[in-house]
Structures are given as C-alpha cells and as structure tokens.
Length: 383
Image (cartoon, rainbow, N blue to C red):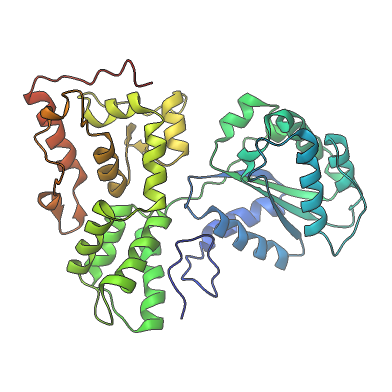
C-alpha cells in the first residue's frame, strides 16, 4: 500500500499524489511554445514532484527531458562549478554521447549546438545555489540560446528554486528577456480531498468529512503539512478506525507542542531572519500593506512565511502562526510580564470545530500589549 510522503518528491507508485493535471497542462503548453520559465516556491510546496510529473509528460511528446541541480555549489570555484555541470549533463545524456568539456559560457552554448537533432527540456533545480561568480555569464548564455534557438537543441529551460525572479533580474542580465513564471500553488480543498480519498480507497479506513476540512483550514493546503498531518493521523493516532475530529485535535496538539517538524522549523528560522518586521506584524497595532518591493516582505514571502492576504502582509497558514508566535514571545529583559502566559500555555480555548483560530490568539496577545501600555517592541537592535 502507498503512503503519505513527507521526505521528498512524490512517486505516484509509492505515495499518494496530487497529480495537478491543470498545472501540468500549463507547463506542457509553455514547453510546446519553447518557453524558458521559472518555477519558484517555498520548500515543501511540491516543486520537485511537479516538475518530475511535467518531465514525464514532455517525454511522451517526443522531447528529451533532463534534470540537473545546483545544490551545494554556491561556494565552489568557477572551475569546479563547470566541471560539475559537465559531469551532470554527460550523465543525464549518456544515451546521446557528445564529448564536450564545459569550462565557460561559450562552451555551454556549443554543448547544446552539437545536439541539434534533439529537442531538450532542461530543468535546473536549486538554481539559487549557482555561485555568484558565474551567475551573470550563465544568464547571458541562456538568453543567447533563447534568441538563437535554430542553432541548438535547448527547446525549453525551467529554473527551479525558492528565490524570486526579481532577484535574478536585479543581480544579473535579464533572464531570456522574458519574465515568465509558473506558480506552484498550495493544494485546494478539493485536491486534499482527492489525496485522502486515494488512501481511503486503498486502505478502507474512512475519514470523517470535518477532519479533511480541518486539515485544509489549519494548513491552507501547504503540501508538506497536509501530508505530515495525514501521515501522523493514520500511523500514530487512529489505528484501523474512522479518523475523527478527536484524532485531529490530538495530532494538532502534537504538532504545536511536541513535534520537531522540519517544515515548521524552517519557517520559524526564516522568520527569525527578519525579527523587527515580524514583531511589527505579530504584535503591532497597524496592519502592514503587502508590497513585494519591500525587502523584508519579498524575503519572507519567497520563503513561505507570509503571503498577500487582502492586500495586507499576513501569515496564511495557522499552524505556522502559532509556532511563530511561540518563538517570538519575549522571555527575558522584563518583557515577558506583558503577556500573562505561562511557559506551559495551552491553546484549547482557541480551538474550534475547524481547528486553530489564529485570529483569536493574535488578538489576545495584542490585548495584553495594549493593556500594559507596552505600545510596541523596541526593534532598533533586532535588524
């Protein structure tokens, strides 16, 4: 029987998988048109699963899909970088050997010129891992190939990572002169239902309908969290019985208080990189307009901490909100007295039929701040 995957890209033969047919169709249409485009999203958003499914689809249409990664290359020398790129490309195209060592951007263009009988779709994963010393020249090479497609085999290029297209544009040559991006969104409620239905059909273990809604309400469809909650529910809490809301609340309690979840820990760590902004967002009285050209907002949005919620900056995922509030609550310098909470705070009063009511929780924190006359945090030393 398959399982809910929490450790990497999904293999539909081994894992319950949201197939994202509509999104695959969009990507396939870009490939057919020979577009070069970017695929940027926070970690554990399903990027790798998506482009692997897309590469299978383009293969069926006669393209030659290959996938390389720049992970762990950020600090290597220029020479080592090109050696690694050469190795990866030769390895992926072993069935079509061409002896060409790549030492610079000119060699890279010539490598694809020697394969004009193919139509290659190249995915570069972890693209933000590219060393700064080669970023500009690589982007120039890709732009040249985009404008001279008749001379080489690179039909489409897909850059994958957690950075933003804006960062590439400002730090190098405009990539391909084309600001083309494909967004991998979180799961919809319908997609979560489809995912869990796959398990129910295979296992025969039913879920009460409110549980599926509660998973969506507390994760807003964040793929890593959806799979993690579902896996814990069936593997640890609800054995061979209908999965109920009691089971869900037990799981939510575990994730909020006891589990070291790598997804949540990553989000909290990214939030701590922008402490001053996060204190304003969490405990300030004035809402913050969402503007992607604001540096802190751009960084936190790219890493999945905040989102554009009705034109305001906010934390979309309630599970993230609670954990970030806990991480940012003052515990020293006399500031803790302004909260009136103990180290063993419970959140039971903030749970409703859908799970965690993060708005009620935030309001209580803000009430304590105002009641004590502690108008705002001193953020001068937090940047």
